[in-house]
Amino acid sequence: MAGRTGHYGAMADHCCASKGMELERLAQHAGQRRVLQLVLAINAIMFIAEFGAGIVAGSTALMADAVDMLGDAVVYGLSLFALSRSDRWKAGAALAKGVFILAVGVGILIEIAVKLRSGVPPSSSLMLLFGGIALIANLLCLRLLWRFRSLDLNMASTFECSRNDVISNVGVLVAAGLVGALGSSWPDILVGAIIAALFLRSAISVIKNALPSVQARADPA
Image (cartoon, rainbow, N blue to C red; front, side):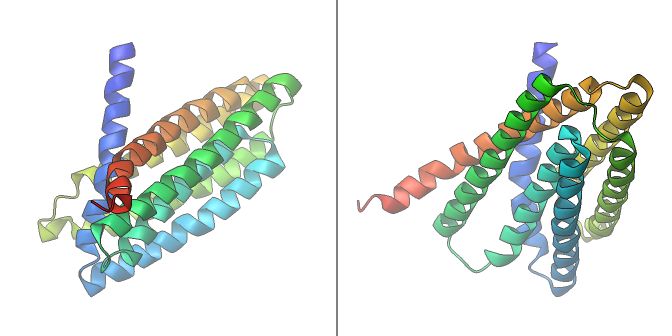
């Protein structure tokens, strides 16, 4: 079981690390750039909506899923903004992204600890509503990106990440159903912890990969 978990974690790290490179290649063309801008807007709006709903509903699963949306939005934004900049600048931007997402992820873990003490179940209806909206948003993003597969670009890693986002959304919906049926906060806590742990792993991987380039830039030699 541990080996399988490590395998999936490695796949998540690889797909998210590859996503920025693939999106950068896409953004070289005007049509793809417009799609990236649209997908960026969808993810940014959904982060605000879903994270806010998570706070109101008291759902760690919604907040963790929203942070995943934020991570995607930052990747899309960096892919668009960093096109004409140096690799070292991109590494610095990636490091900032990793630190920011890590900080938000730690905040979610703190929220989980608070939930463990209070034990108050979240609002299952809000979880179902915004989890469903997030699922629709991710399916739309997947469709927008999928149509560029015919251009012979290697988009497998991007589609894998989008698929993982959809799986996270389904996890939130399952948690919402269990919260409503059982009247317990544990399904929400477990799903939120799993999503947050996987995302924190990816954030740490981004930081580790970016540090060497940033340190090389700071080294006068």
